[in-house]
Image 1 (cartoon, rainbow, N blue to C red):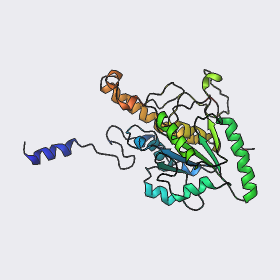
Image 2: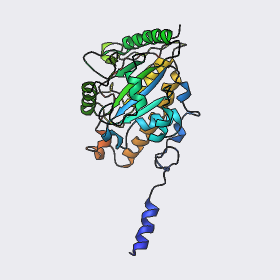
Image 3: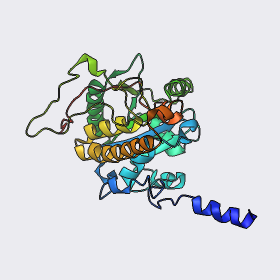
Image 4: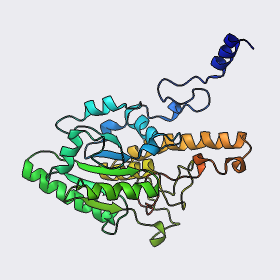
Length: 301
């Protein structure tokens, strides 16, 4: 075959990518599941910082890009993220790619974390971590005190670690050893559902959607209770903002991607052919974090 013919054949086989979601347009585009309007304007009481391991950044089955699409309607490049980190910390979500906070971290984030007037919550298992609900109550009380002292609106800063469990523990330890975590850091962890109403749905005529078991089944977790970074983020942000639309909007695009992946597995001959592939063998982010089935309750008085 002539070189020019080989080039033409390669171009024909190259998949067309969606300009918006940046997934293969024909078989993996998720735009149909994205919210009609981006969810980021719904964030009034919290902001999100994600510390992402460099290895996680290279995975094709990450959950975090789906969160970006749901929040902003597009993927955010590093330049766009930096532009949103103004002096008033007006960003909604910022991703730091590195092995600890302080590595590849812009000054605005470091300033925020070192400010004693900020309320920072790290969602990650730790011997000193509180139950999620107890930790959020403490954060809310501190938020009110700080707002009264400064006479200005304050937000809770949520920090998540997006990595395999082994890497995530190393990243937490390195950040702590470097003295970057705030002195008043609130550590929280999600409580295993086995300690409460595992098989009971809490519903009422005016209730908001109850949390259900893990749904992002692209990457196999240690148990059905273990969540992806995106699921943790969606649930906790919805809880703080008292707005179930955040959870529902993010979960809709996650569910859609899972259905697409199931279709790929089926067309490839089932799960047997998938054994040993990284797409279905590694957990992410909050893999050691579990959550009781609870309603997203309002915290407004």
